[in-house]
Amino acid sequence: MLGDRVAILSFSPNASVPFDLTFLPPDLSLPGAIALIVLSFITSLITATLSLGGGMLMLAALALVFPPAVVVPVHGLVQLGSNAGRAIVQSRFVQWRLVLWFGLGTLVGSLLGARFAVALPEALFQVVIGLFIIFNAWAPQPKVSGRGPLANFVGGTVISALGMVIGATGPLVANFVRGLSDRHELIATHAALMTWSNSAKVGAFMLFGFAFGQYLPLVAAMVATGFLGTWLGSGMLARVPENVFRIGFKLVLTLAALQILWSAISAWL
Image (cartoon, rainbow, N blue to C red):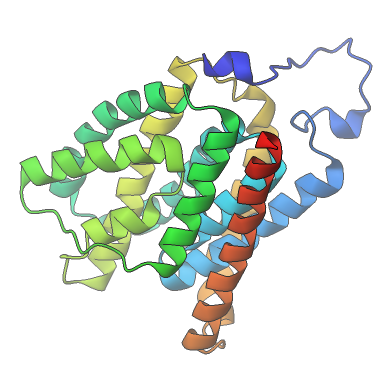
């Protein structure tokens, strides 16, 4: 069970823990928490400009801070708050028929993927995350778009099952909805699909024993700064030349992924 692999702490009024640390997850320092909260602002800046990409950077950062078994569940909760905000703001552009069938598939895929994810050794979990980040940064992405209820259901099942292991599936979902011609519909529907997918992911991890309670204060602060980043994102990042930004972003992701892979290799040595 996933819960057996994660240290579960409870909030106790009688615990002799300094007040300023009681809201932090285990093994996370106050400077580390502040860094994640600031990073949430930065990743939202990126997502507000490119409609995706921030989730990958957040995944890489969380994988450097938390144990592997914690990364995907917490990442799913953070991304749930981030995508839900964009989906609400852009709700009038969401293609709800696509979301319905894709969403039904996510329920199946999340349960299937969770069973596989909780069985992975932690070092292998790190390898999977690290390789996926590098692949997503440099390899051509498959061009897939939903075409009918069956395709949407199957797409939701497969992508959500993968998401339980690799964490950030925003680029895969973006490719899945690429067939939408209107840019506003694409961005809004992508946010709605990711909200549904992350909701199913969080629910599945709860079903399999992951305790989110100790991470909620941190996640709430990250979601709050994420909203601010979304609001300010377009104006700030529009000043950076796109080709310079994309190359730098890929390099940052690659360096983070290499560090994750090195941690996994070190565990095996």
